[in-house]
Image 1 (cartoon, rainbow, N blue to C red):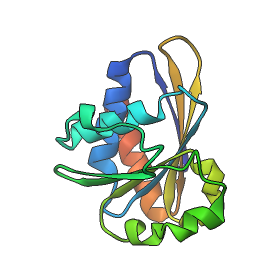
Image 2 (cartoon, helix red, strand yellow):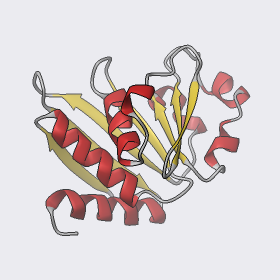
Image 3 (cartoon, rainbow, N blue to C red):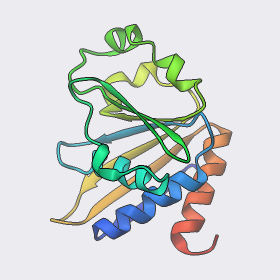
Image 4 (spheres, rainbow, N blue to C red):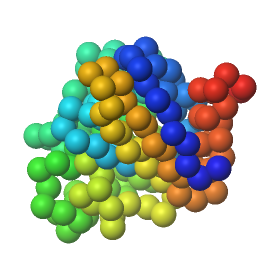
Length: 160
């Protein structure tokens, strides 16, 4: 499986997706989050964080500091690259250190720095389809992420 589409009709559905990600993603996973302003990128990170035992109220968009580190049962590195000019500026931040640190790296607005992302990653494109409904399209890049995506899909379909 290389792609899976999940429809969320509520915040509870988004929480289920976050919990599935927390369970299935391997250490060192990089997750590229793409979507318009207000689509739910930070909300999904909060859901994943909560599933890792991190207080979701501590998880805010790191727009002005670029990266927040959160530690629970798993370590999360949460980037927001909205204000960056592109790949060169992102590379100067040293993202490879985070990619290889063993936590889960989540990058909001990742489409702005696509050329800097590792070959092995999970891409999540969020589309608003209603006031409280979203379509999450998850795409796996690399064998390890394909395995994780299959696990995520099974959990969300109730067959795990």
